[in-house]
Picture (spheres, rainbow, N blue to C red):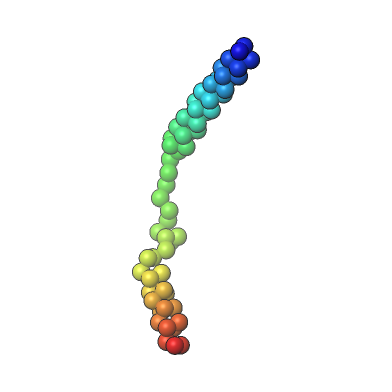
Length: 63
């Protein structure tokens, strides 16, 4: 009975340490100053849609 009690306490301590480390990590990542991506690197959704429509027409015109 003594060994199982020690393992339970050890497991609980490890769990608490991991939880605190996770909270610290989340706070550090949330604290960073996030800058938006430059407009030149953003892909236009309309260009992607047009290319898919053109590809669809090419594939279906063969039949």
